[in-house]
Length: 152
Image 1: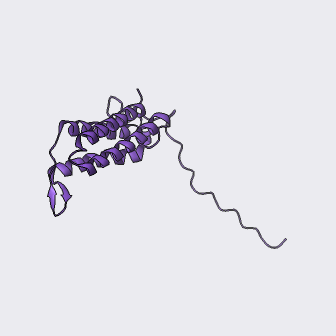
Image 2: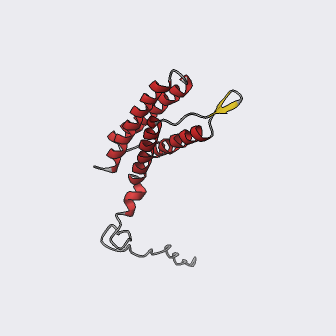
Image 3: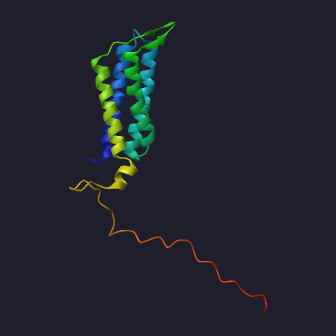
């Protein structure tokens, strides 16, 4: 299975996880539930883009890296509520969705054009070259044209 397809499946899994988190957190934290709905929509867009065209790697990578960071900050330091920070309790659902998002970030990095251009690693640890051999040397700038005399 190509890395782009894996990324699409992981994006859809993150979407479902955020929708489930929205349902769980809606009674106590309606604004956080709204964040989960927006995050689910964004992960769904990334999943559709990766499944159909293979695009949206960069926005997906930013999303898949920033949302787990926000989850971590909200559990360690808390979220601003009125005049204080309120720490949210970590849940199994939140941890599972965070792991899916980190796996999505890894899959998006693996499917990036830079990773494909480098080629697979050989047994010696060096990357293999694509093509028949080394590139020809650069010929440099063209030589200046000879000067013409104005005499005629």
